[in-house]
Image 1 (cartoon, rainbow, N blue to C red):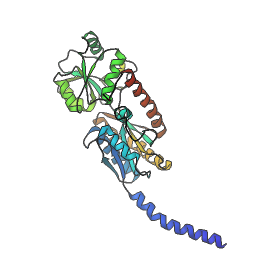
Image 2 (cartoon, rainbow, N blue to C red):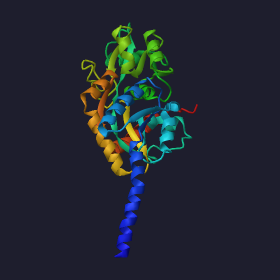
Image 3 (cartoon, rainbow, N blue to C red):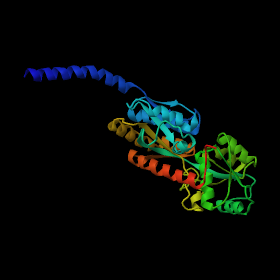
Length: 322
């Protein structure tokens, strides 16, 4: 009986000791780390997501920018953060290609993280100069095939970007030859296209719409398997090239060994957030589509998508270390 009373008293004392700590822990804000600078497309969507998650979780969720090296600085930071659920990563597809560009990375995307869920997709577009006679993807392919070697060029936001790989995959699928011209960001790439410095561009839909509306460039198609809901009259490349799909995906990760119950809670909050009309509208305004997938589906996608881009890099014989 004495032992029983002692046990109850000890447990009660322990509860009194831990309860304040647990309360403080729960009161801490969740930091949603983004690997890109404030004001960009990924950052904007991260802030939309953070605001929705704050309401769902009844906790403050703040966006913390750690930009540089294609998002790998942020990923490295989160991978080494305490596995308490207070530091999460808002990532995109560029991290799947990063190991080929930065071979000395100190983390592994699948080994050092726990998937929370898919957030959505950011659409890319294939465009030509506004004064180009090309009106369709089929016409563009015909022009490329008839052109002398090394004369048809495409712009992207940089070497190793998903936009760059989209151009390489286009060349592989059509068995044509394209010369990559990298630029430092979407705006310079689109301006170069408008000026006729390149034959075509693979760029974000959001960064292309303004110049397209002014007639300085012409959008031929989106790069996803489906049409962009905000522009239903714009076809997808896959309608001309079956199996072609290049759509940067947005997803959330946590450090490895985070409590599964906490992951489930955040994942459910993410699901509810992506179903909100105001969130979906905010994504569409950024040329993106909100689309939740659970942690298990995201984990499977990471493996499959990593392998897919590895095959594209190998087939195109790309060497980012040169």
